[in-house]
Length: 493
Ligand SMILES: Cc1cc2nc3c(=O)[nH]c(=O)nc-3n(C[C@H](O)[C@H](O)[C@H](O)COP(=O)(O)OP(=O)(O)OC[C@H]3O[C@@H](n4cnc5c(N)ncnc54)[C@H](O)[C@@H]3O)c2cc1C
Image 1 (cartoon, rainbow, N blue to C red):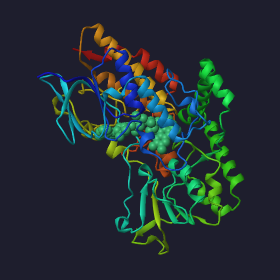
Image 2: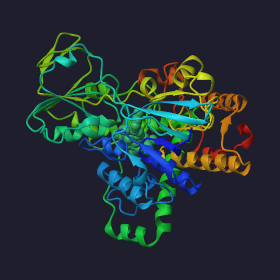
Image 3: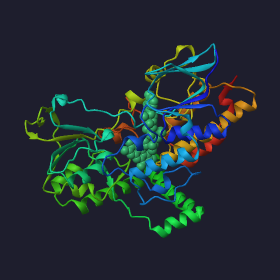
Image 4: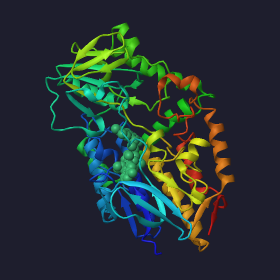
């Protein structure tokens, strides 16, 4: 049986596009990128809610080999990220590989033909020598399990499916959820809604946001002198890195750095909210860093407005016209906004059924053993498979550090394979186990223990209570390891 493609990449977000660029650099041109949506961009195609913006300095959020001198603000709005994704796809000629509206349902390693068979919700399966899944972490929307939610007769909008045609102006709106999305969205809703009630289960730490329009002269300098942009990128990355390494990853050695982060947010809250009761309700009971840091100058003040209510009593049920809390109070609303985030661990590890050598089912294996992946990309018994959204793959606060770390890993791995005249690779169980031990030990130094973080409800933690989403190492270290891992950690055939 012939193999149709060199590689199939699942997902046309920044991760999938980075993987395709790397495969091109390695000389593979017979590629297929399968994307269930109608266009590319992943996160930045799907999310369009008011207030959407990158939540780290824009200069750090791009491929290092394709800097963007045109960001309009220090924290660029979401539409600019989508345009940047389109620019990359055009410049690197990636659209020719993309097939939209293609929902992948599973993939099976075919021992006889030494290739992957990838099945789709519609149409014939496709086969490829290599399989790369870039299905994202924050890509499977979570709907809350609240009694009666389907009976609500007004408008229901999940933040990942924003309805541009529905006007919230003059409406009584409820927002469920107070995560990173809500921090961006709530201030925008307060500007138009007649009344807004925010249902909060877990408060969030919010830092001041040093945002401003990037002056045209600076943008021109970035375009004319690329090294200036590189400096901006390195400076931004170094600051994020400092925050991550000192405040979060080395918590055990440096608890003071973490306390400083917390004090910084507390002072922000004190400055912006005078009412001590409201302040207490908005104050998290978990350590700073247990969740992804958020930045806003408008979030806390939104709750001081007369037409905005913070509700901390849990929701008992939703009926046709409103929401009732556990203490029997109810509120009529016109629109219900679900800022309830994403299902990571159940729906995304993995996002589709992956069956490896000897029938090993990846989802089952992760759940029955531990969530693990060598260097955040490879798993024993899954030959020729790069899982870009694996446990321990998310390194650094800009996701582009993750993508480029993985591109470097691919470069070294495929290079070693080809030098041996081989076409198959598989990570060894021993190398995988040693990596898992190293990560587990490093996690012990970090803030990520349930003792510090349990009330945070953080998606960093898997169902076993281990924080296996983020790689507990500095970006520099992750990059170094991607460029120098022992190639003997893999077998080649
Ligand atoms: C609102 C929001 C704001 C964010 N802000 C930041 C930020 O400021 N900084 C930062 O570093 N990160 C941020 N992130 C994280 C962001 O997801 C990453 O930065 C990055 O965009 C991930 O790229 P990706 O390609 O890995 O995943 P995604 O962008 O999620 O792309 C995955 C793609 O896979 C497709 N897919 C999934 N399953 C299937 C299937 N079965 N079949 C076919 N296609 C499938 C999806 O449709 C999607 O297009 C944010 C995330 C969200 C949701």
